[in-house]
Image 1: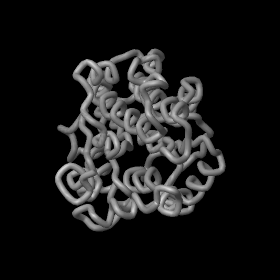
Image 2 (image 1 turned 90 degrees about the horizontal axis):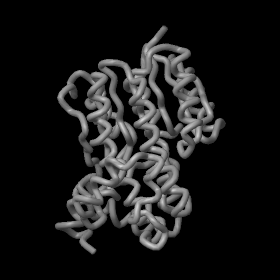
Image 3 (image 1 turned 45 degrees about the vertical axis):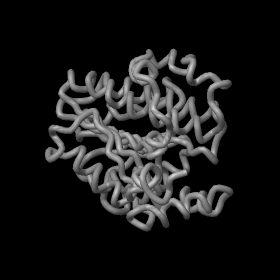
Image 4 (image 1 turned 90 degrees about the vertical axis):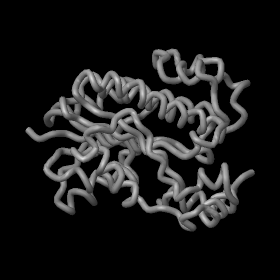
Length: 274
């Protein structure tokens, strides 16, 4: 029996991380689209990895539990890479909150019940959580600690208080980061660590769709005027993920690492300031 990685979200970023840290392990590749999961698994298996495609829906607790059960058939689950989610131009407010916010909370909770000692988790979040005006300490605590089945009933997440899909996405990502903090305490009781990476613009097929979509000029302006002067790559995300899940990151847990080429800094203090 091998150690098992649960990878949710069969895309370029999840695959880049799994290729960096997944050799010698069984990788369960979960995605709502079984075709996407099969494609990524095939690429990885052709490169010598042991990847198994699995259809899973991040917005469903039962589906998450099914994926965990599949993982446990193959060995001890000792790593989670959560790269699943929907973007503001892909989905409705309701879907973004159900998938990105509620689904991530449930995933961290459920994997936290089974993660092996010495295990690690990394959640792919977004710079969007840093853009939103500060919430109150009470609101932050509610996002961090509200039982997951009650999360979507919070006052700040009611439809009349969410302006649009971008605002929903920002709230979801803020919640992801708060959940990583609170769940890292629970994971720590099992000797495991949990962190998040908040991404700026990373070139993937999805991002290229965004560049060519209605918000394309906004995104192009963002990476042109950030200190790095360019978008990032999936492999640069994997560099940080590799640190976080390796022994070199053994003292890092409950943290969110911002990887955005300085776009957030420029948004507050530079050329991107609104």
